[in-house]
Image 1: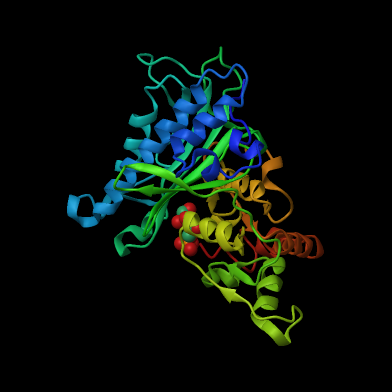
Image 2: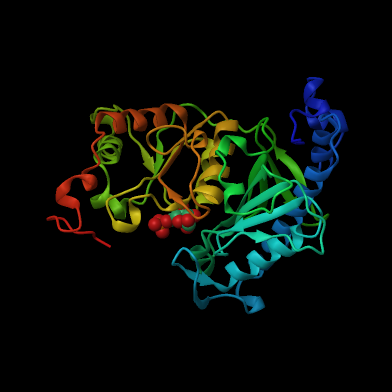
Length: 375
Ligand code: F6P
């Protein structure tokens, strides 16, 4: 049974959390309030969120020390994604596993930093949930002191009596029980959804607790801010090219208004900005050999962010339609991702339909064609 629930008692009574408690609301109070709404809840999901919170505090603490703790820089090893691992990636991965595996809520985990499914060792009780996570997203930003984060997705174990494996995780994102991220920026925040709204909590370092500071985040339906890595422009599909060209044309172009652009190269920072003030993010598939399925990882980047975005009233898409409706086929699969203000995402989907021939699938782009992979 899924224990995530909806609105807490204060919200049901039409009061703000603050009025109901007469003071700041802590994350502990919030998640226990959520649990009390679910008849027969065992506390397993609450315990898991509690451990995820601690993992994020530990990672935030390590990240906050920067070069002072001697774990800055690269390990010299390459992860399953073919990317250079930062030392902090490895530390964060370890902290995530060690802080969550023991509690009895989890059966298995998938991480960006591990090739295979991590099955919770027999010495701990087996739980009913699966955790997919990116322990340190945007880690190329670490050395230059720009915001990074941790992203997580919680699924119910579909076959609690069978050994968990990759197939257990290959569920449509809409089946997520909960999802969220921690952002390690000027402040450390946790932003979560258990399926009824998105709520943001800021770490009060003096008392060591996350405080509800951003209840019920909503993404405005319209925006004039977009985010894309335009150094990839020459590899884009026509739909993306058209969308960005029209934004850049500004006031005198077909959109009739000026747009602003941002690119942090940290998905968490990008998602956080969009949840707080709107906007649209694109990391589309493109014609490069390694770009044809997109860049972002489906299970532990795209799905949890898409879940939060939809819960906040926005839209998240592969470019062709809602990503949460689709089932991934492997645990480290990549996908194109477009998310944010609904009107813009729908427009981008329309452009994909209008230009639905993917040029790099045409014969000239095949291995022996005129246009070889740009690599
Ligand atoms: O997937 C890792 C990641 O760092 C994301 O956080 C970010 O959105 C993206 O890659 C940045 O990619 P690029 O370096 O191609 O701009």
